Image 1 (cartoon, protein in one colour):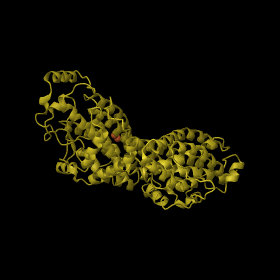
Image 2 (cartoon, each protein chain N blue to C red):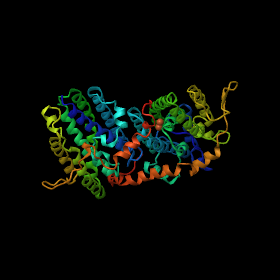
Image 3 (cartoon, each protein chain N blue to C red):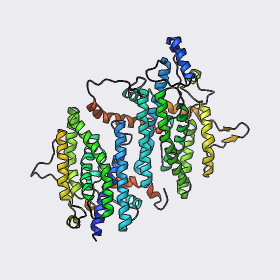
Length: 327
Length: 255
Ligand SMILES: [Fe+2]
Ligand SMILES: [Fe+2]
């Protein structure tokens, strides 16, 4: 699962180093809809932004396994226990695929994990919120995965071959997650009054993070024109958020649930959804480390890394050096 | 008809599978490497399926409640699992050694059960054995890798995990009052014989892993018995409480 973080932080003058002829040929390939492969020439900035983006996506999958993972041991009944195990396992598998895709650009998995643990590299902000009840896991599996699918389908049309191929596979699995999540939500929505109340409360809690999921509005986000041209960034945050609302708000209402935003409505003239501005200060605060679960998520990940180090060391062969895989 | 004996046997098998599945699933997101998270999760899913299928035999053929009720509403005294499966996941070395010793025993059990005169159990045993084959392959590969092909630290960790785990593993074969009856009816050869075959199966692997089998001929290594009679470690009831936390909000509701 992955939303959109702020992926742009171009240091000034970086692109000056690129050979203009190579750059023109590279951009022409992208214009023709060709995929860029690991050993093709690419601008340093293209490589850097892709590593950053794919790495953040991979971290989001592995950190995203934690809030739902803690409910595997509490899932009610064989059917849910089995499905949740499989779902979270898929997410870990996504991390594995994505780390491999990022590795093709020259950064080893261990280095990416180090940057995650040091806080240098980010992951999707939603996972800094707690899954307080079983119903939270249903809302996550339905709506957070739904948001992720919109983002991933969009990115799958990008220009970097290994990332696109990983995303194509991931999207197939995500669509099962969404089905599982929806089934879970419907069961609670049509269940006992306690189950319904639990679901509504979970939706209320998650609405803020859901509205944050696709990132800050385009009017305040930084200049992305080059990344759009290079097909690194494939759709605007606002467009993805609109697509999400247009697909899922009617389904939420159909279940008799309410959304905790009195201003949420579709403007029939413009076809656009209108809503209250999410709290972007909170978004910034949480992404910079001050959310309800940031410390806990990283602590768990760090513990897993530290406790497993002896295993990884035992597997390491002195004559094996890191080689970027071919995707 | 040996109904009490069969019910007891299948409950033991199913409870072991359920509890080890639950424990193995606790590695999800926490493994020493992503590939191992995924492997432990796959194995857990298989074993959860085995538990459900076994409870289903009890439900369909022997008048027991449905699998969800059996798994999610009993208390520890009603469980017949062995102590080995109850312990928390601990260090990876412990979980790996447990996985190896436990799955080797499962292999031997289900191989014997393929010939069982209880037809639905024999049919299920063939299917389960097909999956245990891969579990055991995974366990063996890692035990040998970390025991013999790793480094000094990994060897030491594996040996001490084996030493600590062995008495618990022997508890898997706690003699049952039904052993004679089950063997006479051709249902199951009994725990004594299964333990013997298990030792024969694990010995060469441990040797290949350069690990010393803690069992010394003639020495009195106390097996951790009691689980098959409903006496459990302190770890089981809290685990069951956690497992049923949501289910118990309303056991009559559909989840
Ligand atoms: Fe995912
Ligand atoms: Fe997902």
